[in-house]
Image 1 (cartoon, rainbow, N blue to C red):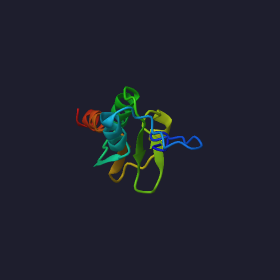
Image 2: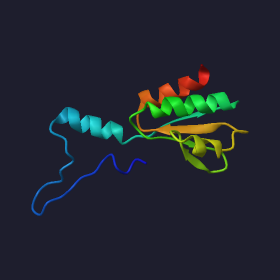
Image 3: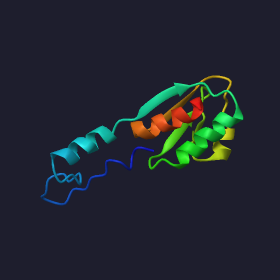
Length: 108
């Protein structure tokens, strides 16, 4: 999920090009390389639908991991239905705002 964020190319005889044009771009690239994780308890199907709806509005990928090791794309209702919600799940995202919007969808 994260591998596509920091792509770089190297031309013969050149320095590593990360695509950053200035220091602010370098900082943004650095911070985007972190993955945000929050553990939540999902109690009913309405909350699952809320996660899918909120994730669909996110620009970044959002994943959900259950305690058995299964992983689903939070934008996929079928994938989300395949997870085990008897224990808390981990919501994983590359952007803190997207992560918080998905977690807040559960609380509503």
